[in-house]
Length: 465
Ligand code: GLC
Image 1 (cartoon, rainbow, N blue to C red):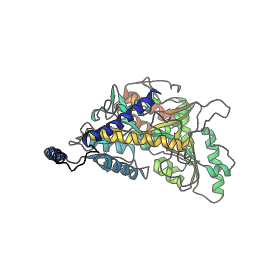
Image 2: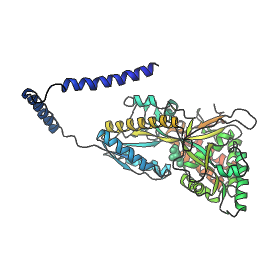
Image 3: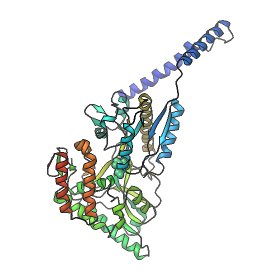
Image 4: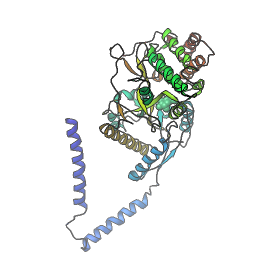
C-alpha cells in the first residue's frame, strides 16, 4: 500500500512540476504582442543560443554489441529498442552482432573490454562471466539502485562481487523441454515425460512408430552435445537431477566423481545412436532447434525465456525465442532419481570501465530494464499461452511433490577459474558421449584436474534445497 502511495505521490509531483513550469515561464493568459514580453523572450532566446553555442554537445553513440545467434530475431528486436531509445534521449546506439557460442563470445567481449578507447560501452554479460571480467566492469550499485529494486533479488547474486554490482539481470533462460504435442496425443500420452526414464520410453516408441511410417530421419530426443558451454549446461542438468552434485559445491568441494554423476553421463552416452542422432555430439542450440523445427524429433532440450522482474515470479512464466514451426508443448526437464533441474542461463547488462559514455550507457540500461519489466507485466496479464505460459504444477508418478531446482553453474564458487572448470567438464563428458573413455575413468580424471586447478578438495554432492 505504502509503495502504491509513493508511486502515486511521485507521479503527482511530476504532474505538478509540469503544470507549475508552464505557468511560471509562459503565462498562457498574457498576450505575446506586448513589447516587454517580446524583449524578455528575445533575451532568453539569445541567452539560450549563446549557452548552447558555448558547449556544443556532440551526439553520443554507444557501442552495444548484442544478439546471441541462436535467437534468429534477437538483433532485429534489439535494433528496434535502440531506435526507440534514440528517439526519446537523442543518444545513438551502434548495434554490433556477436559471434555464436559462449566461449567465442567471451573472447570477443574480453578483447573489446581491454581496448582503449573503449571497444564497447555496454554489453550483455553471460550469467557466468561477471567474476571473470570483474576488473573490466563498472560498479553499477548506486547508479542503478532503482532498477536493482525492479529485478528478482535471487538473480542478482551471479552479477555481484562483494559490494559491487557488475551487471543487472536482463535475459533469463532456464533449461527446459519442448515436445511434439501432436505426436504425444497420437501415440496416446496424456502428459509429457516427468522422468528421464519416461522420456526414454516415449522417445523410443514415437521414433519407432514414425520410422515405421517411412520417416527414417526421425529421432526421439535432440539436445546440445558439442564440446561447448552448452554441454556443461546439459550435463549439469542430468547430473544434478540424479543427485550427482553441481560440479563444484557452495562449500568449495569438487563433486564430479560419484556414482550418480557417472550414471547420468552413462545414460546420455546410451542415447546417442538409439534415441538421439550420432551428430548430437556436435550440436549446439541452433542445431537441435533446426532438427526439431523441421519436424524430425519428438523432444528437444532448449532454453526458455523467464522473468527477470521481481513482480513476475521466475517459476511462473517461460517463452520460446522464435515461433514454433511444429505443434509444440513446453515443460520442465524430466526428473532424475533426486530432483528436477534446469540450468540457469541468460545475461545481464553491464558497462565497460573504460567506456567514454558511462552516464549514457547507464541511461540505456535503465531504459532496457524498464521496458522489459513493463512488457513482462503486460504479457503476464494477457496470458498468451502459446509463447508465454504458466508452468503447470507437477508431481512424481507416486504422487509425492517434485523437488524442483534451477541449477546454477558454479561460476561464483570458481571465480576466475570458471572457464577452465567448465571447459574441462565439457571435455570429460564429451569423451564419454563419443565413447573415448568410460564414465568412471572420465570422472576420476576430471576430479583430479579440477582439484589441481582450483585447489579445492573432492566432496560428496549436496542435496538441493
Ligand atoms: C545461452 C545461455 C547462456 C549459456 C549458453 C550456453 O546463451 O543464455 O547462459 O552460457 O546458452 O550455450
